[in-house]
Image (spheres, rainbow, N blue to C red):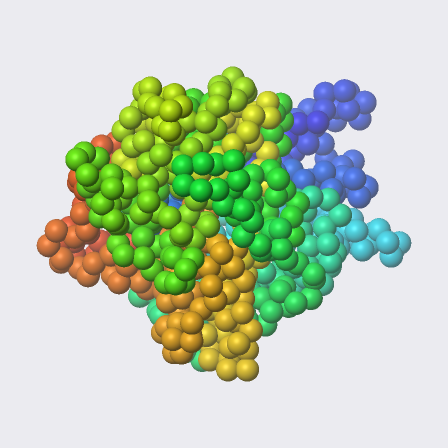
Length: 625
């Protein structure tokens, strides 16, 4: 059976019509492009099939969320990384339209995501509509329970996509029914988020009631997933009401609503943490960390982002990817690794700023800032020199798990065969080098301009998978994220009776980096504890698409970067102390004497002009008028 996507001009909404040529002949269908509802929505297998198709489409809205980190300060996105294969899928359109991303150029780059999100929503509505009609005619309790669970999962998926939409564009049209024709949505107006959020909470409450405690199939949804997503939506709703969203016309923040939402979020997260036996990957233990310049024993955090973690309980809400021969593979190696690893393209890489965020495993606090120096003379031996490998000793284990700096090793792979370890040395690009009497060829990559490349998400072994044939289950919400969001909600709502438990959750996340627990001064005030939580979110979630959403919901862009009209803005440097050269449409300075309007455009995305051309009732967000 195949899936036919009908393109509705307004939203590019895909309406699935399932068909098979042999079955068409058998049923003598007058329309040979679709199978009518009368014949399709008859068994639970039909309902499962439709749900799987919907989930398979929606996952492409989230599988490259690391691009969003390009709008923050710690990750560089240097190019359009979509392949032809992913472009053939409705959700594959989501990340089209950009060449490089940095904090002040993101809004127009995600126009296609707006369209693709509504395609996913209509698919979810298609499932809900069809299964609800089945439910009306079904009396058997066990079958009714199955059907209700499918509706719950479809409502969860719809809520997830709507959460993405409102987080980026604020008010958007709310559609909770199946669309049959363009005319039904051709003049639809934007729905205020104050009306959308309660609908999402209602859908997720239904999902929580109907879903199983544990998914019966990997990649399917469960009660903890519904609770975690409901908690996250409430946390964001609390932030918007607490910090305000002045760029969203008509939205009035409300401190009482913020407090209630923080408390509701804390309650949901607490249930996820306590009630379902979930645990961090490998018990949250740090594991082994090899000495500098070696990579035979890597910490557990590294293996959390390989297929070894697929199905682990830390992945509270995730999407499966198929691997070789499925046409449903992830692109992680291609995007994160360099040429020496299956000739990958290193479309994303760490910026120099991330290294100073990794704390000392001895003191539990920040180390002296690294200093960029050219790799000549004695600079390789100077303390705190960014080109001195010893400057990276005794740091948070997540550092070695996440990035490569000079003389760190990575396994080379060519044509699905391991080629031996390759040392990363910035700007050496695959040249012979002798280290400790052993001859190597250096890590070849032209994708980094900071002095670092990622180890996170890059397989260190050959398993017959090429660079675009991964089968890693992409995590949308991890348990570590739940711990940190819980601590944030408790802190913001000043829930004193839960403060100690919130601190414990943050310390659990720190423990996997082999860091000591937070000292009393780090949690003494709400401001200090928030800083500790933010620090953990940075190093724990880097490359997972969370940072830019965090600084937007906290109204922290000016604090994170520089205030408006700052001459010089922020200049970008690499480990050699050189200004990062502009290229691929990038700039070497951010927020260089920009006015308030430029900052406003960082807090909200534009409604795609093409959508407004098709629908005169779609208003534009204020910063883009």
